[in-house]
Length: 339
Length: 290
Ligand SMILES: Cc1cc2nc3c(=O)[nH]c(=O)nc-3n(C[C@H](O)[C@H](O)[C@H](O)COP(=O)(O)OP(=O)(O)OC[C@H]3O[C@@H](n4cnc5c(N)ncnc54)[C@H](O)[C@@H]3O)c2cc1C
Ligand SMILES: Nc1ncnc2c1ncn2[C@@H]1O[C@H](COP(=O)(O)O)[C@@H](O)[C@H]1O
Image 1 (cartoon, chains in turn brown, yellow):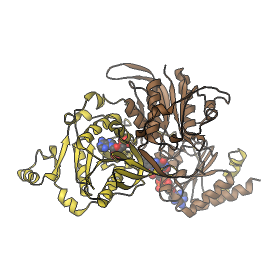
Image 2 (cartoon, protein in one colour; image 1 turned 45 degrees about the horizontal axis):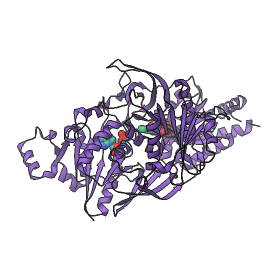
Image 3 (cartoon, helix red, strand yellow; image 1 turned 60 degrees about the vertical axis):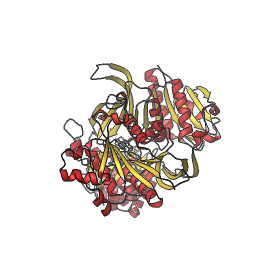
Image 4 (cartoon, protein in one colour; image 1 turned 90 degrees about the vertical axis):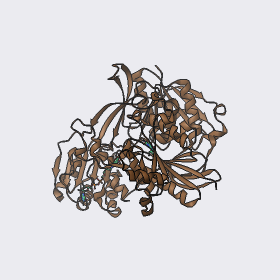
């Protein structure tokens, strides 16, 4: 059995969270398939990078370290990954559904003439029988993803072509180390042999990337606001509540689109998936695309003035009321009772 | 400047943003017929970028290329009303059921035939949200790709300068032409139809659409060749049928399910001081908060 590969994104000395999440999922898949998990890191100043990667159960780590390989450029990264895949013939290849992964993975899939499924929310191994030929394929990757604007869930398979390639958004899979002392093998790639001048035909002439300050993904408590919060000013109420509870503020797309808060706080199918122990949904109706990103929260409280809001169906507590009254009261009650 | 040829890739898609209950069939599949067919939103952003280049420089031609059934000619007309010069409809029964790999294979062959300096596509189409077709075409044509474009700053001396919108910032890149650029929804919206363009192109038709046309109509098309929207078939571009359609697509849909969330037995509260006080006490005592 050929192996499971994960393309790891690298920035500011760190392997990206989305890649560590993919390694965790990749390890599970490799265990099911009884094969190895291999990782690829491409960038510069990568000394010691294995310490970040091996604990996730990586058996082989491919490293391409060169000053021209950071920041990410499509063509050089493409040339390296394609070369590895042509040699190693992965069974499965996983990429983050980020501006990097969604740039690179399709180009790779096209070059290898294999199937690619974007934005998967679940990956499992299973069996598949083609209706027409009645051929049965064992140990295929089920690539499960929302389709049609999130209204349906589709299971996609690639019976014939390899690798089976999938991208997954940040925060969709869990991140879990196997063991701090897990050791794999390092394979250094001789970059000079693979790259030509033509791979640098696109040049970066300017770059402004802000460090992420918001981390709603790992927050235990999330106070999320929707269009019903009404304004950026009213969103302050949610920040107040989140602060005293030690949580973070999240938002629906309608709230983000209306400029009530930053895009990085968007929860749902086109935002982040969260599973906090407490999710307080304020003025959020709970459309399918939003619920897809928060339905697995351990406890959900919905604050809404519409008793029929769909969010109520999945809430543990439904508070029927106006957020402008309910939130300040929650803050007062918490202060009074928490001593 | 010498002639600059831009191809804009545009797709007709079902409007998945407004899927109501009636659009779902009892078996959980989507009733495409119940959804209006629209111009894929990010392809309009792509068209706008092309129109801005045309405004800024001389001798720029914008050609729309769309792959789809006969009714997708509507997209080409719509683009012409907004300022495109012409278009091609890539249409053939053999293409039915193509996934992104098969689609990009067919489109790349058509593109080679049409000739181009820049290809501008949308980042993704809302029927699949895959964002794959642009980069896959670029690979098949062995040209560079610039994805997530927000603004095409300039096209000068055979080089294009583009601002990209990334998750947490921006990047400005320069590339030699030819190149593929895919445009993000954060780019400016497309301008509306232009009355003069509309009047000029409203009788534009494909060969198939002309089949039952009156003599007068035929004559009109003869007099004004720009009203003729060319159709391209699989044979016209020597497609290898093993690489298109359902059978030429590596990805297969195994199963489609309705989204179901398990409804919970929820506790209903009003917004009185007592009720909220009670709830907060409960959450503190069971260590959910505090
Ligand atoms: C392809 C696609 C992807 C999408 N991805 C996402 C995604 O990732 N995340 C996401 O969130 N959405 C996403 N959406 C959008 C989603 O369909 C909804 O439009 C959006 O979630 C609605 O946001 P909302 O609940 O804040 O607004 P609304 O639906 O307008 O709901 C506002 C709610 O506030 C309540 N309300 C109003 N005033 C008050 C008040 N004073 N006090 C209390 N309650 C009040 C109302 O009763 C209502 O229930 C996506 C849509 C599509 C098509
Ligand atoms: N059938 C098609 N005809 C023309 N352009 C297409 C077609 N399919 C995809 N594209 C282009 O490729 C982009 C990405 O599509 P997708 O990979 O399906 O998300 C779209 O925004 C279009 O610009």
